[in-house]
Image (cartoon, rainbow, N blue to C red; front, side):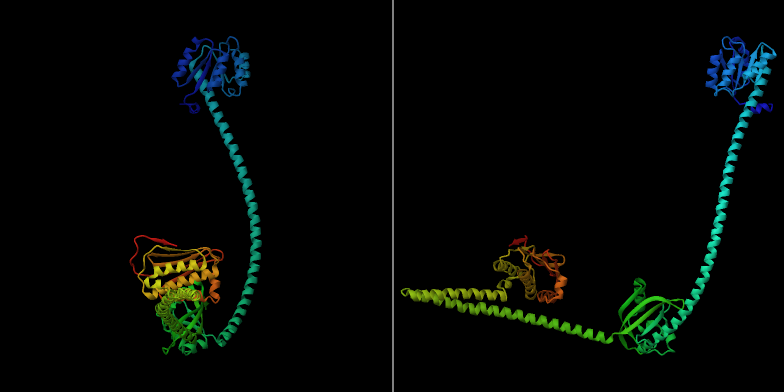
Length: 550
């Protein structure tokens, strides 16, 4: 295989244009055997159409054709952008120089004479195919080189821009470093001056701390050691100055892990203020202090700064006050029990003794009225006396019920029914009693206390609420027995009411506390009030159905 064969396409397409098909058979067979793909056209128009459509690598064009001859056909092919680059080899029986020159002027690349010699034709075809292939490769290489030149020029331009920008940045950075260096020198000088002032301030602060009447100390975070303590602290804990480095802070806490708890609180909140802790001196005596602490550093070590205030006397007074308050509450409970017993006894005496006497007097007056039938004036007087006795009996019963309702002797439910009915009659405000639980199993003291709380709530409604309806509800849940008194009145601010002389609210709270109940008041100006009292009770007898009474 020749060197030119390397440039021939593996399957080259050849278009043969000749108006005599018999002249084509030998050429077509020979080219087919050598691997060429052969296309045939019989005239100029067909040749131009096939050349545009098939784009052959080479055209063998007969010169002498009817109509448009081979030279004009070649000129048309070269005038078309789609076919101008296809090499054309003319075939003719003429062998004149003028025909060869005209063929080259028309755009042909070579010239063969008829009858065609196959080897010569193929040799010439191989040369021109190789030349076209090399030309195509050369054009592509030229295009690639031009592209590479453009890319390189662009890269050189960008590199130049980057270099200029880098030089500008270096200049700016050098200027910045110079300014930073000047600033650093000034900062170092200022820091040295500040350190000198700090040392002077530390010396003054140490003098102030030593002279402070407040016991102060600095403890290590890593270990329970005292890093620094003033004289007041050492005197408070009974520690000599030479003993200070050897004592452990844990020895001063009465609670075993007191130091750990204090550190946890300081780490969590950043500081603690007036935390009361029980501590002891080295001799074992205990006392109470209020600790204020925060985290900081001391000699480049994490430390806790602690200020201490002795509150032993205040704790003693508070304890005495608590004991006195508890005694007062016990006395109040005792006095309230006595008052309830007195109310119960007086109510019974009024109801039984005075009521019986008034009933007997009523009977005597009725008997006298029967015997004075013939004395109209005396009969009118006796009738007036009888009416007065009946009014007195009603008043006695009313006084006895308000001292202690007789219905309370039959249970809390009966007492609440009487209270709701009496409230509606006295105030004209509808009062609805809703019972979602049966009669609770309560002793007399607990039932009386619950009744008095409900009674005081309804009294407050009548005096202050300006309500148009009241609901009293008794229910039972997993917490125990719950009594609610709600109204649609004007409401109030419980927090503000607690600051005034609200003895009714205080009395209700105290009654609830004495029987182990919890009292809650929900109210706001303009939204009514709900008073709830809940008390844990054992599961007792309950009605099969809820009742609703009003």
